[in-house]
Image 1: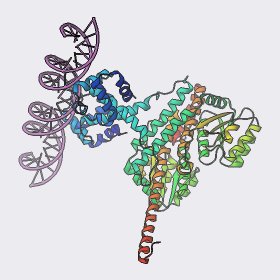
Image 2: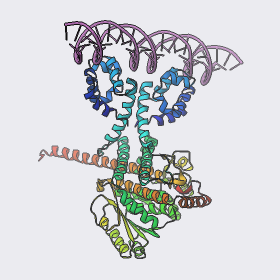
Image 3: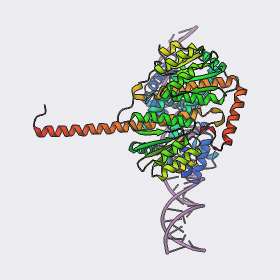
Image 4: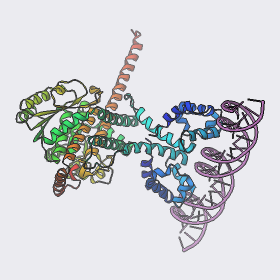
Length: 288
Length: 288
DNA sequence: TCTAAAATTGAAATTTTATTTCAGAAATTG
DNA sequence: CAATTTCTGAAATAAAATTTCAATTTTAGA
């Protein structure tokens, strides 16, 4: 996946006036674009072919042709998962339910992958790797995700806790110090309890990682590293199904990144030890 | 998926000499084609642009451009399923980790979908719909899945419990009756605690649903309905990541099937739950 | 407020690419 | 073996992509 549309969306803020119009047009008519010529696109944007070309290059493509090709690729992946995404009708068959639920979950994983900023992710896992203690805060289904994370991080010997009780969470937050990390899990990004806890954590000098929906939320503005998950959930009906999947996927990625970091470090130590032994062996004259 | 390459392969037998050469060239260099011009392709086939054009039209595309676009779409889908499924190397890059973890999770969802037997699923959700009380048993990460299920089924007014403590689980099992259902969640299918609880549940006349890996396990042999999840996990390394996703997906399907069974009633309960949570002052609703 | 420099923009020219045309070559048929 | 059909590619044409550059707008400095 090239993340073309994501890149387009991102670019809107950072691009000159005429190109912004082009970007918006692309977002509104992605399917049509792939079979249009530059001149057509330009005409529809009340602009010039040159502007369209410049835009394609400014967001990192070789030219309009290259852009269209990458877009066509992404769209075909997206449409793949769009199949049977329509909301379930009252009389839906079991087969229908099976494929719609699964497709929704899959799509949410892919969408969140596109929203995951590599820099933020790097920040986040570096914080976790360096953390002396990790505290996770979540309420409801987010608490279960937090517990899942605890189970994972404990496997790589991290001191790591998640409490379901608000008072316990708060006491835990008060005991954090500068080298500790608080992880806030809240899809809405506005959960009072969680906001309260990370404020306490911050006041104690701890770093904060937020996992929340792609939007400007109270929690994301408080965090040192923000990881977004796809934000299209129909919260009322869906019982937090897809956001939970996406969030667990983010946890998996963080955990794996940390585990690999340790792996690399361990490997480094091994190599050093090996070198030192080699050296002492050379001096000693006998390698056997 | 347009099946472009399939169509090309099919065409070889039914097409004139020059076009056959073109078809073979396409099959051998599909990735390159998408960024080549007709003249380049023609040159590489010791042929003419006209021949390439004729070929594209003869297999049903509007022209070379159309052909390339469809091919690009298909290739991106193919690469999605082929690429980056290999196990992670020690020095894996962050991008690598992101896509491998996500692809593994996605694949596990699709694979489990294939293992889900519609008859067993029907049995299972009918049991749940008719159940007076539902008890879920799981240990470790399976306990978190059980709790997730409780959160969901409570939304549609099911009396539903999951305890982390073995004695509580056992006491709960003893109190089950003929109209109740016990759900055993255990990827290995051999978890002692869980086996113990469902034996008690059965002795009380309750029905048993098992969610476990695709194999002959102690738990599956005790259950009235068995739902399998994909069984390729290297449990030691992967920290039960993919089986958890697949199991949650099964829970989502069960929950949705039950909710649809009594759609109107369920919707009413959902609305009530939603309103009450809104009232309690949490902006983000029930998803936290 | 004015002016020089810099950035932005699109018209037009140029280049590249796709498509069509058509005449000659090859194959087929009676 | 001619008449006919089918096939083929060179060349012409059309369309699309890209580049160039001068006009315009914006910005910054005096």
